[in-house]
Image (cartoon, rainbow, N blue to C red; front, side, top):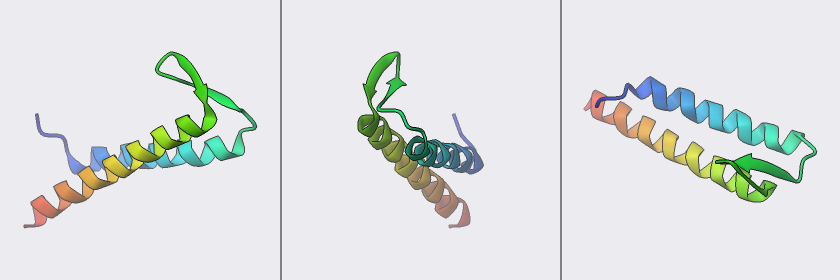
Length: 66
């Protein structure tokens, strides 16, 4: 299944916004896949997803322009 590159960019921006918002909220834990986890584990999870989505976006954009 082909996913348009713009979808990865939108997902990356959503992850980045949620990551930044996690620093504004005064919480010490958050729900991740139905479990309560430490806020730093949640932030690492969001940062990894952001990096992956940006990488996928850049790879798709590079393949389209090549």
